[in-house]
Length: 136
Image (cartoon, rainbow, N blue to C red; front, side, top):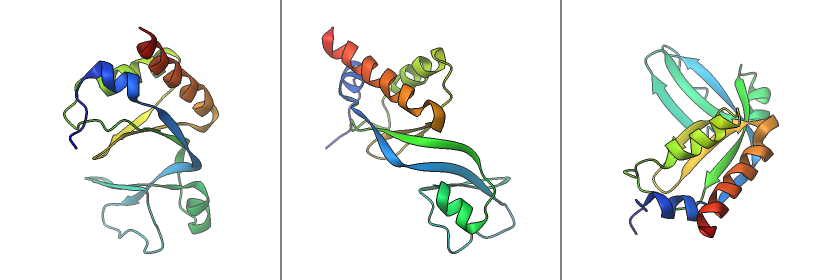
């Protein structure tokens, strides 16, 4: 099944769900290997080093330095990697509320890391945004 491209359908059907865990962003220097005990949800290699997104308790247990204590909201609509404007609409709405977001697009869904202390508010805003499109 191909991912959805239509912006109205994406917003209407996004059905945001908050994951249970708390996540943090860590980094491993470019010349170092990722610790073998780490089981990251996400790993991304940059010139300066590798970014790892792991559960907070895992980072603390392994003594990893971290930033951005966050919750993960998954937009459960199967979005196309070629969809135009979906994340722009989402991040604009969260920006208007002063909520930072680190978005990740995967094959099936888009995922939003939002500050833990604003996660419930972010989820409510996204649900209201989707409901407004369904009502129009």
